[in-house]
Image 1: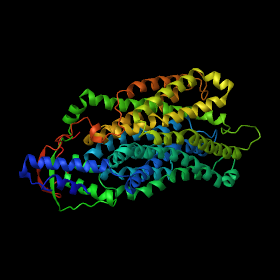
Image 2 (image 1 turned 45 degrees about the horizontal axis):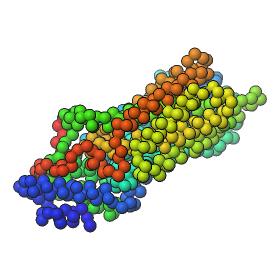
Image 3 (image 1 turned 135 degrees about the horizontal axis):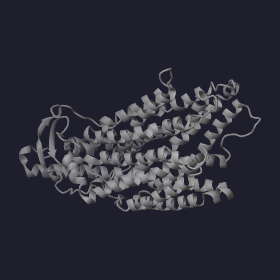
Image 4 (image 1 turned 30 degrees about the horizontal axis):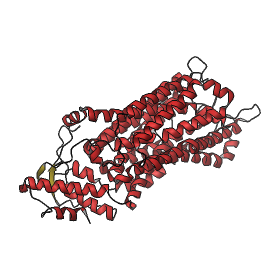
Length: 560
């Protein structure tokens, strides 16, 4: 039975006129609730699979593009720094930090725009930016006035803006289309594609390096000519999944919650629910009469009123700080990757009799294989264990358990750093992979899921963007601050201060436990129940009748 049929049973008029007064409001409020119930109680269908795939391909692309630079930076150093074959510390940092800076801006900007303009209208725009930024890197050059590194930093910043937009848009679209009982698994499945993106970047690197093996070995000793082909292919191929997903993103329907609660068009939303749950498509008649309803509207004043209440502010603060604390350790843990790769036999080759060409090839092959192993051992399993438990155990217990375990692991790694590495590098590798596992079967997954559920529709994307941007600020702090600290008191590359950095990570994980206590459990509750707003008579009246062309959007003067 469709939403419109249900609403007709509850009222003799399916399309009340403005003159109906309170009866019209009551009828539209019933229609809104019936449409939401239809979405919340829908059986798992192909439309849900399609939503996860369309959103998930974006996160696959994001992770691929972010992770690929870790390997590409090694290649770029070989090509453009022929003396020692390495980028300077500042060049390496610039390449790696440009993307998170752009991501932070993209999360705030697209989060806000998705609440103002609409999820559908912005979905795909961020992917176009990622595709353009990725392609720009692959064909970047240099000249007397500008270096290659500077050009790449600009392109990676632009790509980062697009990646940032993907966070709030994919999270909110997935949560607003999902039925209540599978919402956690759908959002986790989308986010878990990051693990496969990391794995794919290392795999593509290995394939590209193997394909160019003969050419790399025949390059002159003073110039890694064919390594230049390798890094451009590695980065450029990141466009492919984005191009595949672009059409589907541009044609995804608007979420019924946005149509009802922000565009205030209950009739169109109920029609959309009936259509996309049965056929997976949608239809908008531009000439159809539109009945706008009176519901709470987003504005700076309303934003301040809503989040000025402790019960709402503590949720925003808890979500934002938890993500901030997690990302400091999540990105900072990468500082140890060279230790781990050397420990498992995939570091830079050593030996006096090896030719420069063979050393280049072996270094690139080892980096690729080593990162494949680390992705498979620590990153991917954690995501999918979260997937199995998130709708049965709940988000909050998983996040609490993750922060507690990470506090313990980082205390052991930090305070026992010298002893562990001195006696058993294998134990340190195990702890490193265990930390990766409990980040993903823990706060790295839940800090993405919870902000997509706990805020009202009119601020859901904005607040998710704020939370995600807080996390990215943590990533920037980790990459910039701790990268400078790791050699404090020792020679460059000595990493003598890493043990103290791990101790700092443990402190941040401890604070994450307390910020998690501010968050509600979202398992089994509808988005409206989690919004902290009374849903009785949410529709306060009928704003009037207009044609769709006359008023494509509600009045949003002073919009947040």
